[in-house]
Each structure stands twice: as structure tokens, then as C-alpha cells.
Length: 52
Length: 206
Image (tube, rainbow over all chains, first blue to last red; front, top):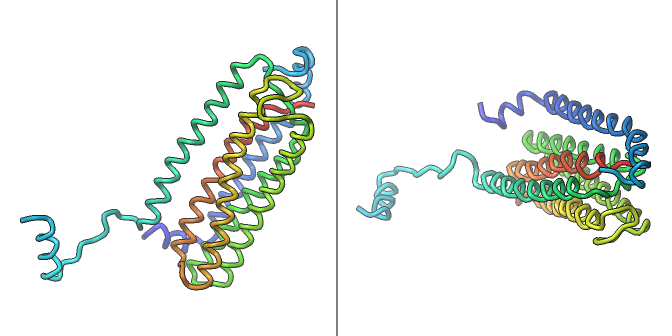
């Protein structure tokens, strides 16, 4: 079975799962970043507004 | 016997010579392009990482993740609409394939507009290619280079989506062309998933 045929038979289900996983991973990245905003700001305050 | 003679003989005896590769030439070409472009983006992101880690006063100018989160959502969703368009094209539903390809292009345009809005905001705050109010002046050069390279890919992709979509509807292109374009579009989407954490999320501040 070729890739195209496999994709046809699988429908959109697999694609939707991959899309949901990518959204979840991206959401996780943003959630972690959002949690660390305060921490970054505090560290930045000690380093004159910026830090590394 | 020369190769030309051998080929002629093959034709004369009814033998057919198959394609040089097991995948269509267009698909091979786009994969080669993607591999080459991966190297380009990798070089840019590695250079960005070196600059960031080597600078004591690397700026953290991003006050919010709302805009970049929206941009990411739009681009990820555009990959899904691209897939729906490809499914429709493979099923022979020309109208649906065209419609979803145009929706993908519209999402790409929306992403580009959000991107330009963000650039204008940073420029308005005083950021240029070689200076900014927050710290190391190279931040602007590296930020605009990396995000600009990606934005140029999105812009090129949108133009390609419009051209291929219209020509597909007109019968000049087929589902294979939609698939090739889809590979490129997913690549652009994937690159963004690397750009976001490195360029945006690591540079958040209040």
C-alpha cells in the first residue's frame, strides 16, 4: 500500500490526532513560558532589566 | 555498445525504462529543497543561540505571549486545512480542494499580518537592526533575520498556495502538486515550532 493509499484509507482521524498533539505540545511550551514570566522579571531586575 | 544504443534497443524491443527514483520527481525536488532549507534555518538558529549565550545583556523585550500564541495557533491550523485540502484533492473533490487551499492561504496571510504587527510594535518601541533600548544591539539583527527568513517562507508559500490552487481548479495541476505544496507548508510550520521557543519564549519579560 502506498503512502497515498494508506492516507486515503485512514481518513482524517490520524491527521486530527497529530494536529491535537502538536497543539498540546505548543500549549505546553506556552504554559511553561507563562509560568516563568515572573521568575524572568525578578532575575532581570537584578541584572538591570535584562539577564542571560 | 553505447548507452544510447542500449536505450534505442530497449525501445525497439518494447522494453520501458522506469523512472530514476521511486518517488515522483516533483516530490523528490521538494524534499531536496526542504533538506537544504533545514540547513539554512539550522545555521541561523545556531548562530542566534551563540549570540544569545555569548551576550551578557541579551534583551528580553516580549511582554506577552498572546500574539505569538495566536500566530502559532493560526499556523498549526493552516497545516490542518492544508491536509483537508489534500484529502479532498485525492478524493477528486476539486471544489473542496480549492476551497481548503484558499483557506490555508488566508490563514497564512493572517499569520503574516500578525507577524508584521508584532514587528511594527517592536520598531515603535525603538528596536532597529543594530540598536534597541533594552540591551545588546545585535538582538534586532538576529531577531529580524530569523523571523524575517521565516516570514519570507510564509509569504512565498502563500503565493504558491494561490497559484497552485487556481491552476488546480483550472485543471493544469493535480493532487500531486497539492501534495508537494503541502510538504513545503508543513515544513514552514515545523520551522516555526523551533523559532518560537528560541526567539520568543526564552526572551519573555514584564
